[in-house]
Image (tube, rainbow, N blue to C red; front, side):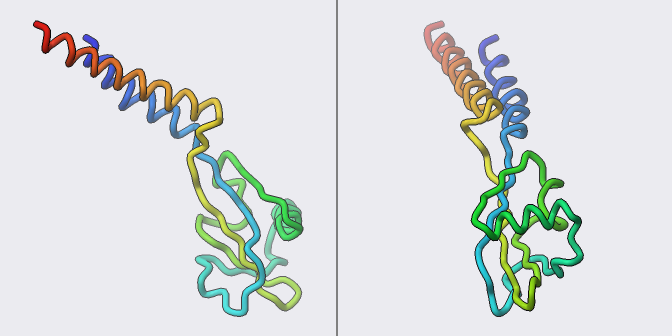
Length: 128
């Protein structure tokens, strides 16, 4: 019984909570001469008004963290460069697990509980 509960906690619950703890960071790297390192390249003028505000604030030093990749300026994932006032500006977009979020804590706790249940099952099996 403990083994089954442990496996469910590890495979289903921890993974589900872990997905909720994924965050997307958007930060300014600086100007570059050649934007070929960026996966995406666009003109600043092609951005929506909201994306322009985020890009401007990032260029001023602000770091942004979003809960979904759809909130990131520009399409897709990966580094992106914008041509603004004759220069290329490079931005880093990365995905990471936020362990201090409510979902991150729940994911870690359910994973540990799963390992504890499996460990208890092994311990009881050895005694029998």
